[in-house]
Image (cartoon, rainbow, N blue to C red; front, side):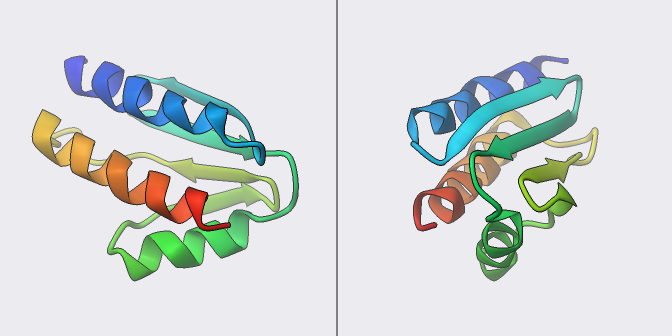
Length: 88
């Protein structure tokens, strides 16, 4: 439970980007909604960094990391996702 909260807090920083509308999450299920259709481009950026995510639509990124994820791994994953989102 704690890891999901940490990951959501880290990812909420993405809402400062103009092209990120909202970051949502419950437990270990997360979504990032964009203001424009860039989900596929962000997925490519995440995959280039070794992070597996999927698109729920052309404006929504979806992912559910493993339940055994540590806080350290969650922070690293969030950093990589933030990098991929920032370059779009």
